[in-house]
Image 1 (cartoon, rainbow, N blue to C red):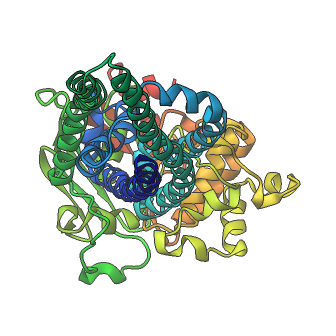
Image 2: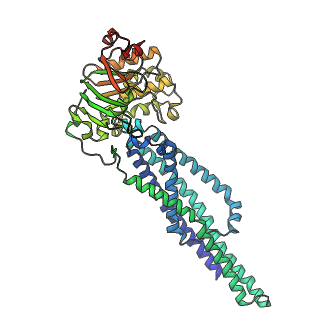
Image 3: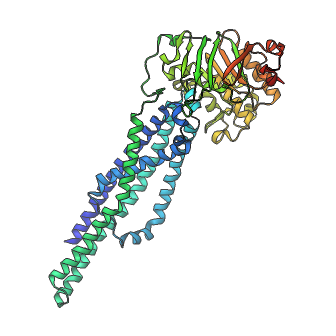
Length: 506
């Protein structure tokens, strides 16, 4: 009879274990995707907090859903399946461990790929936000998770097969125990009471006690992870970057060409230092098609202005309007589609040069970028000749974070990514700092031409005189305030020991 039970147990345990683990994989994929999505939804201030550093966020993304799996597994599977016995696990582990190890290694490698995408996205959250790439990065991450799930199911099939065998061996051991115990009873060495007390106490009691205490810490970890996942889901950031259910376009969604930007009495303090204003009483008017520059020493508030224009933060007081409409009245997604930002240290993503440039288009149009569009943007950024000299041209891989390109080449690819976007407002945060003199002159000429004729408004943060020579108006910052303004010639024409431009242009 016990042999029949063993066979039935083999089928039942394998079926239950395999089915439950398939469900857990699907739940895990869903919660990892939701955790990644809700993380990208947060405002930039969220990522400025010490406990939300890139490493900490990536660690939560990797571990929280896994911890939740343990909780789900205990509730749905461990009630039905007993723990593997001490004897059977080592035996089957020695016999089959190397095969399962290969499968687990393959799964771990593929899971690391999805982790790399998440880490790149989180570490470059400003680039993702400014290019409105949240949906695209979510799709890429989802695809990586699908591959992981497929290989995990394959590994789980083997795992649950051997686990079911171990559970069947328990019944085989019981059968042998009954057979040998029967012999002991028949010879009078054991009584019936002695046999059954020892048999039940040792085999059944020991297994159930081990099963209970073995997973106590898993329950605690899973509960903490679940709390974080649900907390992040319910957290509504100050600047709600909800890209999954965007509001319908507003009436000004048909705007074309340059726009008028007006910064009125701006004051701002970073959330991490709420009592220290970085800028105060800033008033800047940017006419359609105008090229303006912010200059000044380090820490004077120039890059903070770029952050406010991109609406990574909202000012403490004052407001920014575009065509007389406060930017807070539009969604962050809609506002940032009108902009393009090139940062001092541009971020490139794994893939080809062409794919990185095409990312500058709105998310829904990224896959529709034509080769002619990409080549024109690269030509304007003075990098097309270099790209065409490569064996694979636009299909050349840039490596992780663009490591296969030099600093100047990465920066020109980032400029091309901004130009293909055809933005109404072009934001340049030391965008030409890594270029050599010859390349800078060509790129500056292209950027200057792009900002003329009412095509777009341009705001540049710079330290070098050559970068802002052709600006229509230069705003000189010092200690968070504007101390001078005018054209390049006007500023050079001013005299006085206290004139900040002498320090900048010396």
